[in-house]
Length: 139
Image (cartoon, rainbow, N blue to C red; front, side, top):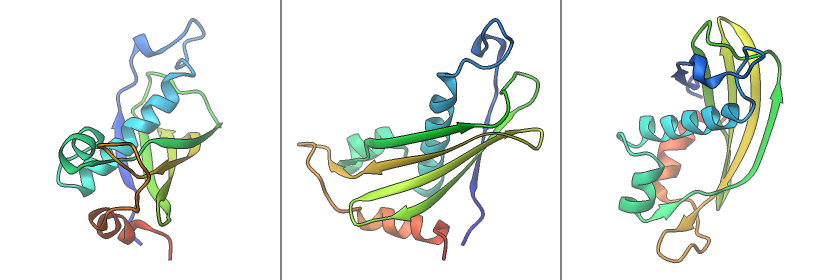
């Protein structure tokens, strides 16, 4: 199994609320940015946009779960470790763990299903996805 993909987020003052911590709604957005970064990493620079428009398939989310451990602030870069943990016939599940300066901030699970772009119908995971993802899966 390969090490997780690490995606760096620059948290800014504008991402924060009056309590000086990140707005809660920004955290799932950062996790999704990190998953898109994983796709770009394993698909030669192509993320969700290119998957949908150029490759003919999408992967909409059907489940998201987040657990918060410590506040996210602009003090340090947010490092999101992305790891696919399950690749089914027609779905994929990712674990995303966000940390700052070695402190765990959140962990989440995200499940997507594969669809045909043309008609939004269900489809099996494309062969190129299987080839790109399998080295990252737990044994």
